[in-house]
Amino acid sequence: MIFFLRSLFSVESSDVKKDNKAPALYESGDSFKTRRSETIRRIGRSILSYQFSILHSLFIFLLITICSCTSYRYLNIETLTPADITFPLDMRRILIVNNTLPQDDVPFESSLRQWPATVPISADSTAIDFCRTLGVTLAEFDGFDDIRLLEGHLRKDLSPVSAPVLKREEVELLCEEHETDVVISLDRLIFRLNEYADNPFDIQMREVMHVEISGILRVYVPGRENPMTTIVLTDTLISVLWLDPNNKEVWDLLFSDDPTNLFRESARYMANEARTYFIPYWNEDVRWYFTSSIAQWKEATAYAESKRWDKALNIWRELYGRATSWRQRARLCSNLALGEELTGDLAQALYYAKLSHQLMHDHLGADDTATKKQEVFVNVLTNRITEEQKLRLQMAE
Image 1: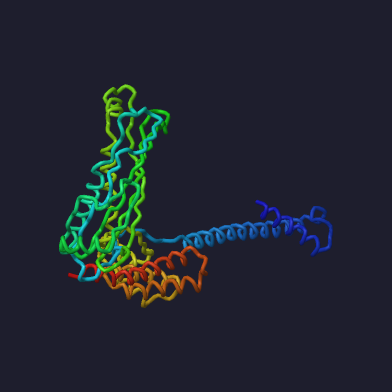
Image 2: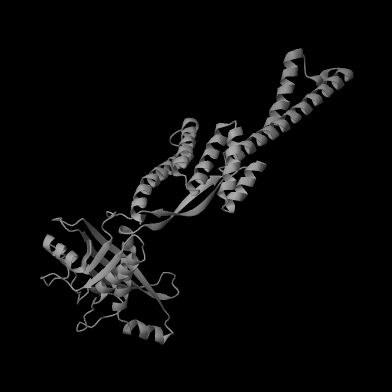
């Protein structure tokens, strides 16, 4: 509307300046009609020009919006990650030793109930559960020939908090007696319990227990004065029990429940988590691929959604060969990198990922979000190629 008024006034003022005469109201009838018709035509052209300008601006806005929208889809994948520790090929027999002292009195703080001072909370048997769970997990891995378990501490002190290191002669004697190559010793496992009442939604109260775990796991091999590696285990597990004030059985369970079961479950959980130090494990990760409204590209997207990566790769390669814009080439390179990774060719995947990153870096800049995402992808593939060598050694039969 502002544009229309300005156009109207500009027409009148330009007419006055051009003719250098009085306003058309004082002219003859024919002259007045002529000028009035001309003014109306000019106003009409101004209106049409204004409407075209609005449509043109709207078209540009929609075009920019469509082009600027990132069209990609995420997918979850699982990648095989090597263990943190790689044993030599001649070390395939493992002895797991429970070298801890039982924690007979676990620190317990509660704002919900008063635990009798005459009834100490014990974490007995938790170390045994830890060692057994770890042993079962390692035995399921084909990379080890034999897994053995020794229950009974070798230490001479009386403090469950301490974690004495096995001596060289002790390690050699253990390996000789049990015919093993490696000793994994649990040298400390202690707990702390914190309990409180919580009412998060102002509807129903709940009991929350925090089980704090700390431990030390060491790996020994014969012929070394010091441990091969020392693993510090720390975690906090949370247990929640909803309390219904009208349900007497729940409250009876709360005050009669022995927290020892929580310790044992927590120990088994920690042992299962500790497996990643010794055996390869599957790790969840996120990837993405770009989509497009191009018909052939849509077909590739359909193949990607159905996990038929070989079919999708063939189409993406064909589209890349005909791509004319840098943006299409960058996105297709990223898609090709994903397809090559999921079909097992990590070297080719890294090649395409680097091409995509370079194109985005050159045209979008280093600080653009798309460039940074592609840089992360390059780093992930680089690490996977490095880890592939460790996996081959750990998975070798």
